[in-house]
Length: 429
Image 1 (tube, helix red, strand yellow):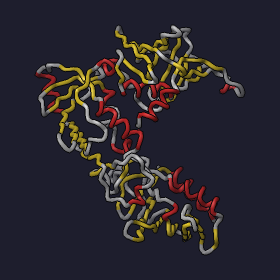
Image 2 (cartoon, one colour):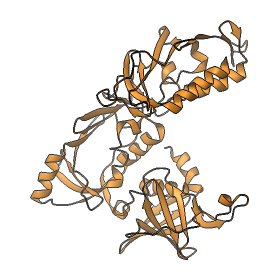
Image 3 (spheres, helix red, strand yellow):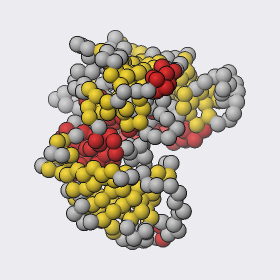
Image 4 (tube, one colour):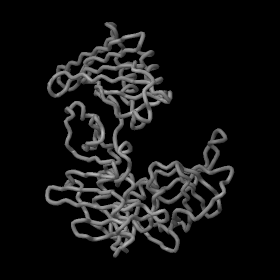
């Protein structure tokens, strides 16, 4: 994430305020949000860390820290609605947040997909987690020192190996410039899927931020810890033009939120907060843009849609305006001209079709060799026209469809997505 964007997001943070909502019953609940905070403390157990905002930058002990910036941005995304019926809480909170200016304390509890916040009056607020950073909060991550730092522009490749899972993140791709256009991270996931996939922008930004500020605390491990580390079979290899780091990563203990890490090049050992790995070791499918056929409409030549009973062809022409500033497009369905504005809206719904899970044929066999739907895109690539063919094959479990793109399959989609797709085509007709 650029420093400019980060600062804009941080400006959204502030002192905690409560506001009542008007309208229906669900909207009458008080809402907990964060605005204009300038000085807060985080507490976990008996430990405290205080951070302050100076010149629009969050700092600890007078030093700017991107991990603190990320945490505060995550807090800015929290919007908690007061519960009318309280939930019985078990165990200790994840952490306490103290607003030093307003002298208010808020307790944060992990509720799996949600965060529960309890104020000092005992009122409870439920908030969706925009990401897992709050659930993985570890005070040690704010106090830990840098293990190493790789500048965002210096990283050339990252290889992750977890058991049988082995893949790379790289800026290199064989996708044409047209196919790259919708993807903005500039990074791609290789050696995992048949199709090249772009790394999602927000996730890649978090990865680069982690590596620029990778934290831990030095330890001398016990023999038992070293043995467990050798058995974990998890490594992260980071390469720049001048150096390579290999990290051997231990498993997360049943109790605790730190992993043992060995930097192979120096033989140094560190205890590293799990929050450092929340994005680094996220499953491959959670790292990528899952779009199945995100082809810019300005490059589309034709789109053929075939079912068991129908076949429709959408054709397109594109011409530069006389001043060269805009592209004028015309679209036809089976020879009849379409309303351009309406079709562009419909095409957006087609373009966002996304894989929902990785497909394992041994676990999810096909119900039939006959596709439910076939789409063939012809578009302008770097070396002339290119055609991609996508088939949606029904699964035996009736929960969705395998997506076969150019005769290979990586992902499945659910019934709801395909139903939406069919509805869009019906509307175009």
